[in-house]
Length: 117
Length: 114
Image (cartoon, rainbow over all chains, first blue to last red):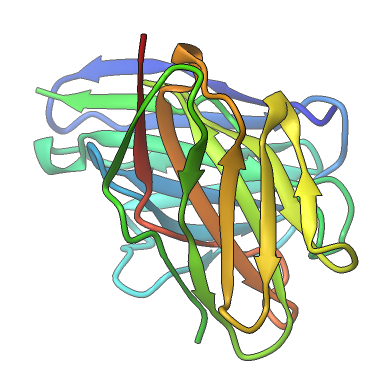
């Protein structure tokens, strides 16, 4: 089945540090990937849609300069949290789906637990 | 606009008993409906989907869901719950006009006791 790999699984760093999270589709090509944020015991909040070879589409209220997304290849999207602060601490999850058809399920990475001290 | 409601924050069930997790949806067109499960500190795992056809959909790990258009519901069911089914369950909807983007419900924590 389709596999999405997310790295790192956990990051602990000081305030002001920039953190890069990678999302890879291992056995399929993904022209579109999605980045979510999840707070404890809450649902997933879509942050942005990552489009291969073009700019990401951000959801309302998400700072594009804060959360930089790069989707340079058909198998890799990266999310960089710039100058991270404690309020950015959260669980970040990416997803991707094989094919360009809306009825296919998205497959999720295992998430990245980001803790900013 | 599309939306998903999971009315129960938590469902408690004894092992061996039937498990039902409720989901209702609202979309402007025909819905694509999905169920996912999340274990602690993990991403979401796909369980099953309804696109078209038979209203009863069978998925992974013995789960099934019934699509009911008149009640706009897509409840998840399992005839006999296992302790290992304890997890967070999400219902999601995508309407045919918003390729890729999923709208998730708030999630339902399932607790299966031995």
